[in-house]
Length: 92
Length: 169
Image (tube, rainbow over all chains, first blue to last red; front, side):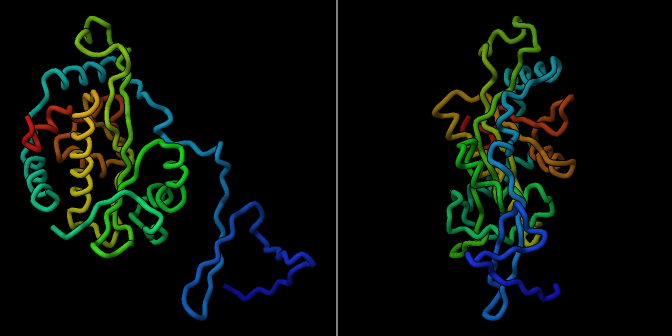
């Protein structure tokens, strides 16, 4: 990255090209180097997670398969049994 | 199996360098997880080496629900009329430097055992997960998860099957 010099205005503010409407992150790399990065700012109201779309609406055939599986649950396969055993051994 | 500690995400955890190879899962942990937790959409659990704070893997867990209303009522008479409650695995990721060490498996089974604890307290019929891609889908299929036909990246496992895994039936 090329060196860039900017001077502060009378209120101590520095304008950086390309950093408008962005969060500025100043990261200390080591004793002699700092890295300046920018993060895109997303308004909280625009941020959406898939959990906010629950319940998951299933098709008729998917709903039928869920009902069938809950009424007649399959036995765990060997990979799952072995993994559960490993987990219990290491994590109680 | 390597030595891991799995704990609730805290402010002391180092998340900035996490890189699992999926940009959306990296971005979630690095920049979005604060909002996720603040809104109480779910909880985030991280894997660290004992005595370290760098996050090597993580998963998110929340309440979920499957809407079965497309099915005629007579076919679901044994089930509740409201959407079927589940424990939802929203995300699971392992840092590239620690892939291939069964950390994904450890995180998955930590989630499943926690889901079992939840099911012992409230009514839960299944665990469900939203896989990010085909590779992730294959990971869940390996452990017996059942994939939906019309939403192939959405998989589930009846809680009774989870109970049997841990010898609780």
